[in-house]
Amino acid sequence: MLSYTKHLHHTSREWVTFVHGAGGSSSIWYKQVREFKKHFNILLLDLRGHGNSKPNLKDAFSDKYTFDSITNDIVDVIDYERIGKSHFIGISLGTILIRNLAEKYPHRVESMVMGGAIMKLNFRSQVLMRLGIIFKSIVPYLWLYKFFAFVIMPNKNHKESRSLFVREAKKLYQKEFIRWFKLTSEINPLLRFFRSADIKIPTLYVMGEEDYLFLPTIKKIAHAHVVSDLFVVPECGHVVNIEQPYVFNKTVIEYLTGLK
Image 1 (cartoon, helix red, strand yellow):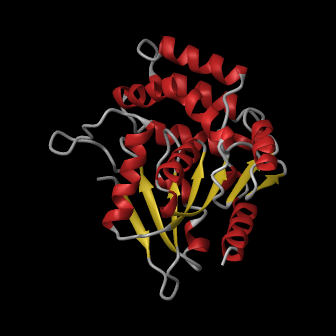
Image 2 (image 1 turned 45 degrees about the vertical axis):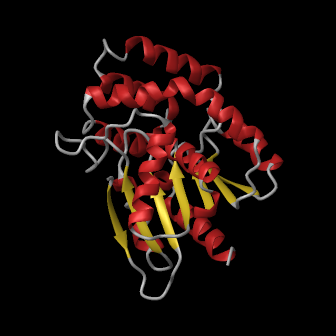
């Protein structure tokens, strides 16, 4: 089972589950924990191979790495903790997992908050993925990861986000990076389906105005899907919860408490 931590609220019965992106860990939410635990019970997960969810010889993740199997890792935790329903907050690739969970288990999802959401790979993103596939077994994965991080978060004010993700990625093994990278082979049809299917679960997209790769698509989705809202954070890139934590926390908490 995934490694996780939880913080219990003394009166609230609502849960918020945080899902990080590829190469990160639950530690990327350190600017959120203090504020969110004032209002909700919170669950912080380390996805397989990340943070403290390192497989070992006695307890390896035997399933093939697919979006469904990794989504089911999350469901295993909320089942174990007897969490019937939760709000889910994700960043980057974590938003794909949350959207997949909502598709498979809609009764478990109270709402979705999608930070730096990935719902389409544009031409530049697809070129990056192809380069990664070609070089993933030749070039040290950290070189690739640093390159990807710079392309996705290029500006000077994105430096903290880049540094944090690269620091977390150093904890991955090359073999683990390759397993996750192979997920790209199934990402395009999955995202195409997500864009076309309006799941009608309350969804807030929180995107940086400088998230050049992914913001244009999210604007279209938020307009087309009936219970979706978009909040664009000024002077901010892909990792909104790190770069603009005050704005992120205030916006998301107001949104979640307003759903009651």
